[in-house]
Image 1 (cartoon, one colour):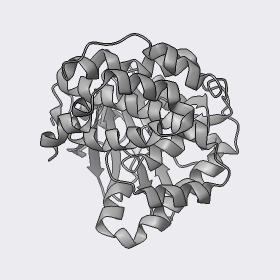
Image 2 (cartoon, one colour):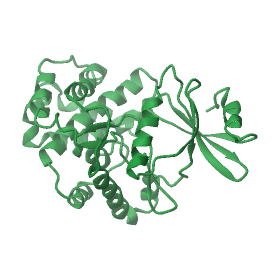
Image 3 (cartoon, helix red, strand yellow):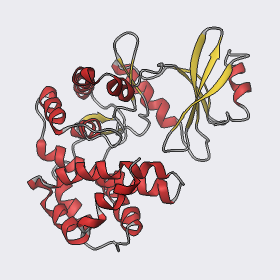
Image 4 (cartoon, rainbow, N blue to C red):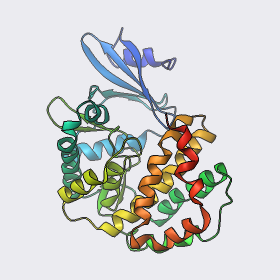
Length: 315
């Protein structure tokens, strides 16, 4: 990745003159990240082109998390007109790679991530926008909109009605800060032993089970059923029906999003995750609370158009 043309001027104006700027990462959005080195210190440059990305929610949620005592990257400088933000550098110890390098630490690290969620859920969500039914439905709709055409299926009636029925008992719960992408690629292990949070700009006020699903049904790495159960028990009281419903909703959304990333955005690498996401979705659909949605899938998405449709794309 090449830094944006005005990156050098931006970091110089921020007091980082002469800094080296090197690629760090991109993600599923238009955002890109670079590491900035100068005089023995480092920071992270976020490039979020304003024509594609609105960085104001990121800044607002960062302030919200800081006010509650959680570790979001401190903002060192910003220029929203250019879409550039200089952030505190949390280092390279990302949860996913740390756990994969040392599987013996998996349970302990996941327990710490669950502890963070439990602490977060004890705090009010403040003025975050609500996670209401129309948002749930719009996300779930990514499955018929993008996934079904990609595997040669026609969208079928009854999908939204089935989701209305299963989501109705939980859609009005806005008691918790829902980060919405709380998983092993967005959690950093910090030098002080704490956990740093990334990619939280889409946070909403919603049901506390959502981020449990995001962490324990991780599209990007296998989380065994045994670890999932152990961590749900570690969290404490969990509404299992809500957990299954939100799991199914999130996984249907992800299947649609990853297909869209392939078809629209030219990012086929995300298709390798589809079989794993299907495995989570099948597990969620087995819960009695999902009966209407399960019936729709059984009637309209044949087995061969599910995980098997993507198996040859797994890297």
